[in-house]
Image (cartoon, rainbow, N blue to C red; front, side, top):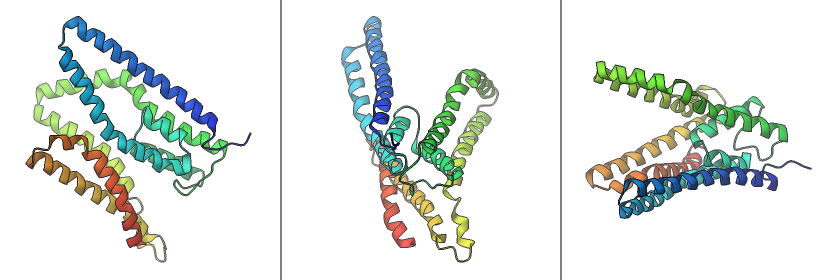
Length: 249
């Protein structure tokens, strides 16, 4: 049987796993509703909370759909569908897949067919790496939370600075990936020199859109914009890549 990244068997396997995750979600929803009745919560508020949560889940889901489409060119639909439906994000999945493909002499977005071995290698890199966070939670989260609580009780200002520094450090790892190809500008005769500026310009556009959304939330009291800021900045940022690429060549 010839392997293909969009083989029906892969769709069936992924659908079964996602169905299991959805079944867990329904199970805990039913348990939560049962618990609400036990403690006497207002049914009207419970229904309103469920309705609001369901409604505002649609907006962030747009960015997930865009991410699946982005990765599907090289990886097919089943793998991105699975990775972004359970645990994953476009920033991580794209980097993990790109690194795995680079190790095999391939380039994400330019390869349209993979061998079974290449596909398995990419899947293992994307899956096992993201599971590190799951393994670390029971191992270190209790001690880490206790240490942060102790630090906050001694010096709340320093604890806040420390938490912000940790967050900025994490973001810096992804920002560095955006600038990794800018060095091509100084390579004589490199036909793709200006291509290194494309992700930088896209990042700037996305950041500006996020600033506009934040300003509307603060100045115009558009609180609902908070649920749409991420998908808007993602979709419009990716759309800007088309004219930016044409401009930079």
